[in-house]
Amino acid sequence: FAQMLNEVLRGDRASELLDCAVVVARAINRHCVQGTYTGWPDGPLGIGNRQSDKKDTTFRGGALRRDLIDWFAPGKKYRTNMFVASSFRRAAAEKFECRAGASVDKDPVRWVFKFEHERCLHVNFLRPGAESTCTNELEFLLTPGSVLVVESVQRSSSLHDAPHEIRVRVSPDNALEPLDLPVAPWC
Image 1: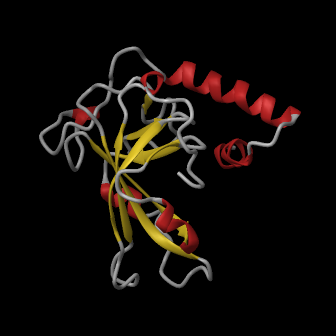
Image 2: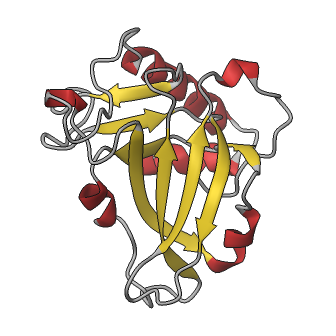
Image 3: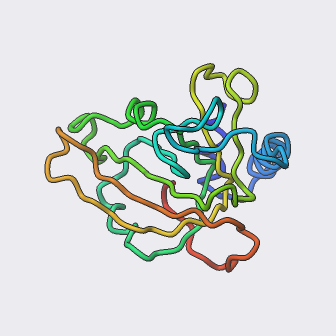
């Protein structure tokens, strides 16, 4: 379901389907936002829903079309075009990285999201076994339209050994950001 919803949101074509997708996206966001942080990536010393690999950081694995990597230039500020899930654990994100050579036009990529400590109004903590069907994964879900700033892009010299890595800083409040920011072609 999430994949289909994101496909409609990314397509951004005026239709009844998009109208419905926007209503569903708003409902998901309203349900997930708790008002207080029940889970936050506090680093290795965090307890329970606050334990993560790195403080104030989450990870996402995937694939990116080769012709899009240059779009993500350091310093570029943009809005996401879909819900973006990320994990408190790098190992969980690695499961979603495509294998080098598995696609003729896509490369494996790892996204690293950096947050200001407990200062993000549009991130949803998905509780294991509640909002998330993953019972052992701690994850954040960013809303469509979330504002990110590219901090760095590290191109892999050997995709068989490591994916490209794109590090982004997450804006703490989308409402304080310009409305006319470019929308990412992916993530």
